[in-house]
Image (cartoon, rainbow over all chains, first blue to last red; front, top):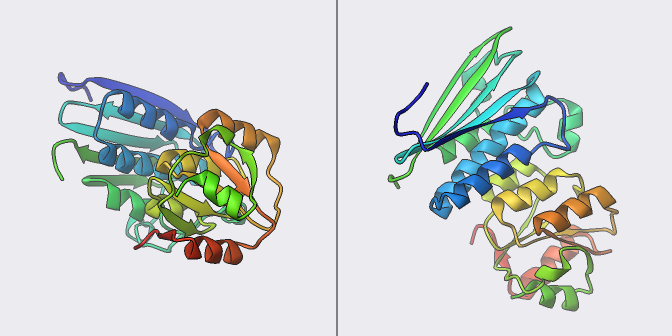
Length: 146
Length: 115
């Protein structure tokens, strides 16, 4: 997926189960967007979505990558993991529904708000998942809209 | 209101970010579920939570929360405080409960995040 107008693309590996490093990639994304001079409201929305996507991979996946793509018109956050996949995406999109393990809940995760938060923040959200293969989440943010 | 004012009036301990006590506080929120804080967190807020792990620093950085208050004298690990210090996050602590802290902050004129 290359776009001739692409300003930049950065990929951050996300380690499953590593709660100590969790949030680092989203923090980097925030810094990059601020350096690019993106409007602070958009930076906030992208950052919240990136953090939730990052945490979803830390809590639920076996690991994956978080990618930031920026063009003059649009910012895209892509979370791609290597499984196990989401059995029912509609259910996972419902606020309050969570399959987070007890350990994650004790840390204050697993409120069932991750995907709904991403949807609220993004202009367009696409989630594709295949059991046994993985999940691909793409959140798009229009720079000029809103 | 500046962070320094609430530190003084409520006799809070400064665990990290002492150089940022001039930062303005406009809102308050009290919650231990990080996703809720992420969805509601606003720039310039004071956040009261019993969570003390590394991710509270990430949440504070990402939402630009002005400061975190840890209630009930709960200890925070050095590693978390160092991270907060490096990221410019103010962490305060108090022997009071979250309920008492929120009540006192409200009386001092700090409004809810939803207002």
